[in-house]
Length: 239
Image (cartoon, rainbow, N blue to C red; front, side, top):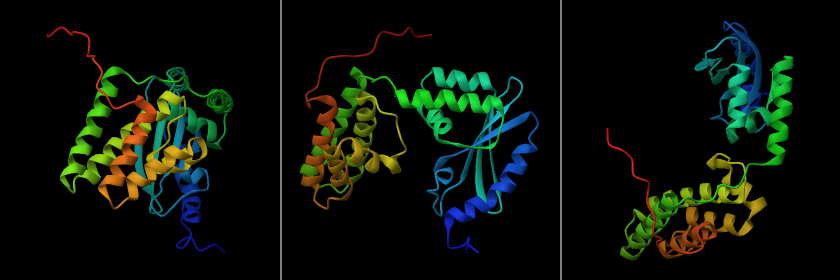
């Protein structure tokens, strides 16, 4: 018998029947997809159980509760709302439906899974970095450069924040589906090993100079250079 206390994945799977019982008791619910790290068999001691639930009617909502000591998060949506999220290119929703495991089957859910898998395989359209986003990223990198030059310990925080912006922008301009930060290194290692190396140095280098150099190398992969470009937002009427 598996020791669920010592095996986080087993503990999560042991809570699945109780979570599913609660989902089935939700008024209007008629299908459920198990998503996230636990559904992929990658659960850890801090993971929860994530579900996408199909409901009848016009309402959508999110529910959080605990079953057998395991936190549960459930997103309830009518089918047409799920399809609207697909059409809007919501990568997290598409990925969950493409990779999730049906635990409360229904033909509507089957159809959504097929659609999501096709969208996920095709990949998102590349999203060029806008002027304002580029300005903000370069500004963050320059703020980090100043802190590194001054030997300020806050360089660690600002450099990591700038690296997060750079990685999110990199996924966009390359036309990759976004992933959670805890999966950035692994995903980058398979797609752009040099970018993965730069990110790892930003996160682990004890020396501010090495950290800053890696940050700038990572950023230039998105911006091309670190110069400021002219730009701005369109005028907006003041109410």
